[in-house]
Length: 351
Image (spheres, rainbow, N blue to C red):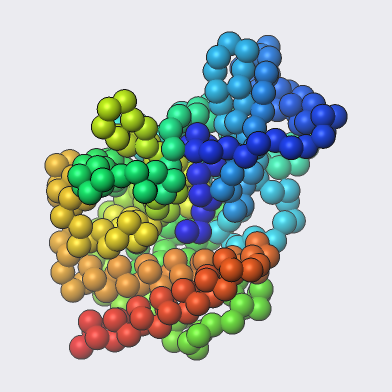
């Protein structure tokens, strides 16, 4: 998906292979940052965590037994999509709000914007021990999967219970918000289409056809009456599992792509687990906490719009991320097919 794959889940961290002086310098930098937040601490080991596609993450093990995650954004000036500025501030906000609502998420210990003392934004989090759902997939029985999807539904309903102050991305300086959902979604889609043009990303359909979608379906977007908190990247790589007997859902990580909008948009991030709107186990878990929004024609249209948006984000990010090889080929093919299929679905649903 668009966000990182599991940088602080405890899932198979990369072994640090940097030369000793470089590793010592990195440890000193991590120790200095942690010391500013926690007071005198001794870092006994740092390990780069795998899976991040934008922010970097390091697992810091302290002499007192604590295990923390330090996430660092790219330096200012690094090519990025419009909505990607200040992602760690969004992640900190998401985890704080979702945690207060009863969702299992990492504890936020500190967020530091970029400034004179730190050229890059950073975030300090508690560590969730376990493995990602993606990494554990082959070990899960059908019964495990059903129980976990039920639990996931419960967690997502808790996240969606949070109401934001406005619609769209939560950083007003980006200009990607509005007092209503049609306005916010139009701004979000307009921004990613501008990113597509800025980075010279090819599209399988005319950009004008995509740009017209928010106005074409404004009446359906207006059916959203509350700016619910949406993680929007809750795929299997961002779900942490652990087990002491049966598998359990230990937490939801990487809330950096979060926004306030249609709670149904959350289902789109779950697509690698299957269409959430057609998953009886997940829906039952959701309903055990809160009502599921009606899955009527309007809802199906909005889900298709959000799938278009996510496919555009993933396609656009391929250039600034410099994706190569098999993954780049897969993303190009998948996103083209996704856009074409969802546009055809919108045409059919509109009739």
